[in-house]
Length: 356
Image (cartoon, rainbow, N blue to C red; front, side, top):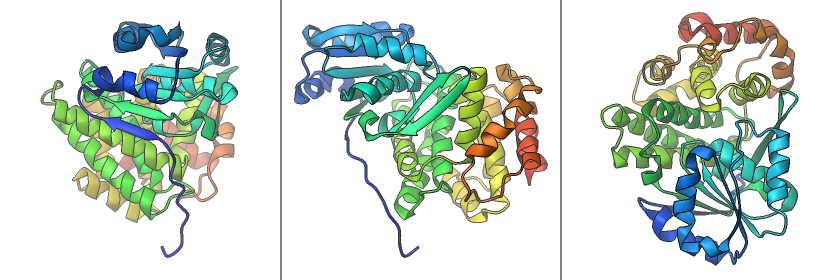
């Protein structure tokens, strides 16, 4: 590839074991914030309070009403809590970051993100809102967090099954970046290294869930995944997952973990170079089988039916997904082809047998 465009995104990243407790106050001060809105899920309220203790005089409000897929009514309540404040601090996973982004989208307030999962959303300018069972996404530089504090220690208590699902969600960002509309040599190199680190972290995690080095690999892999995805854009995989998640309130990370090997199997028939690159990064000759194995054996979910999706739901979203598929997807996506993909992912059958 002799010509390409790479839009490097601004943002400060602070990475290291213990940095959330030792350095978060310094990052808040560096941005000149004196009235902070803290956003966290109920389950992480205590952690957020602990991290904010060194600068609690600057915390003006706390919002705990985080919901998956950021319903519009939740976004409105968070925005109301931000009135008169000068910074948003999110402590949590992708839904928490997404709520902070919803606030930034309309207020322009800067965001400092402290991730506790491997979502990767904290380094992308992509926002998403759900209304009437339909999820809308967009891109806006205002929602890109100004500073991200990555602390592997904060992910040590994340259960193994959720860690695997979150790690595979990050893996999906990497794989997607290899065929997404704005892919380029830089984003592809970042994505491949992200797959390598995520694979190493997931493998080590199965032996010892408290392995800080494994957690560091996963968190760094998530950062690389988000960075690659932010530049390359979304493809077939994310269009499927966003529509299913918004329409049927499916858990975000587990949905991505299940769907990933099916989309890879579908696209690899006409993108063997991508399949070979993923195989090299995974250190496995059959990347489709390896990703499916991880989702089943470690994540505990073989198919979308395990998440509560009904087979009859598939037909109701086909047209919506088809309308969103990028024109340059490696393999043309027809209604029949998409139906086969979704039914296989629903049943949890062998993706290679169904789609190649």
